Image 1: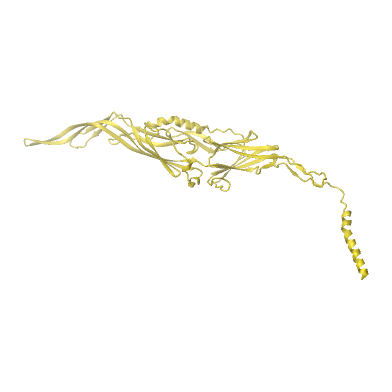
Image 2 (image 1 turned 90 degrees about the horizontal axis):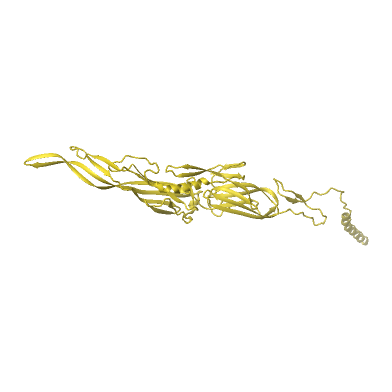
Length: 420
């Protein structure tokens, strides 16, 4: 998985492929239940013991879903299907007695097909089972509560969601059966044998077992942000390059940066596409393809920045840079972060901006510190002014002050020697 360095540039965010796929699949859902062949399953020929052309059931997709992934914040549900195709009338030859002509069994007036079974899903440390019937809802609501997750579910960027479907599809027919049996009878000491025709009728129910299994991913957990520049609570006015590191367990679809009430930068790291699946369902997918100039990619695996985040987990790292400029006063950065499922988070960073004030040395000389104006490569700053050139300083007063004690000491010493 990649680490991203994005230099922000104006982009128009649009993840409409995900929303359109969800709307399309919800509208499609009723037609997936009890259709003749909703998902283009392989077809076979009916037999005396299996009347179906098609009997099929499967987990189709999640709503919403992008790239086989959903979100635990989006009230996800499971789109499913079942299909049954069979003849309105079928005739099969019966030839149980080789010494007799073949008979026939005729199936007619089929009932409406039905399904009975269950859809189970494993999420975290919990398995839940949903009953399936021709009256079941579609899509089926899921319970992706965060309380089901264990620490192991955060070792990978997404949690695992596993489905298992097991059911039986049935249909009932009326039937009429004509067959021949070989019979022998004795009359007047004479035994005669021949084929005797038999008739029967009634009803029969045909059943076929169906099953399916699918695995999906669920985006769970936090998104953490570390402001790198400005790092402290205050800084000098001017312009500069803002920098921040983002640790995400929910991949971004759109990011925009607001400064001083205005959007100064935005980015769309992924492009979204739409397609169709085997059951006619809409499929939304995404690919990392940031637009604009100055975009750098460095391949890397997910990281575990345990010292920088609240939740010890696997994260996808993003590194972002953006230009900014501010005058003195209070300043606020807000990063608006939205994932592919329209879940939005705001991250704010407030700090103060001050003008570099001149500094006067205590000597009272009036010499102020020089000021460096801000530029694209440096912030404003104050630093000591360069010393003015002039005459070499007069140290005579210091010399007298230093020599006087020595002269007095020498005179005292000479007076003492005279008394000896």
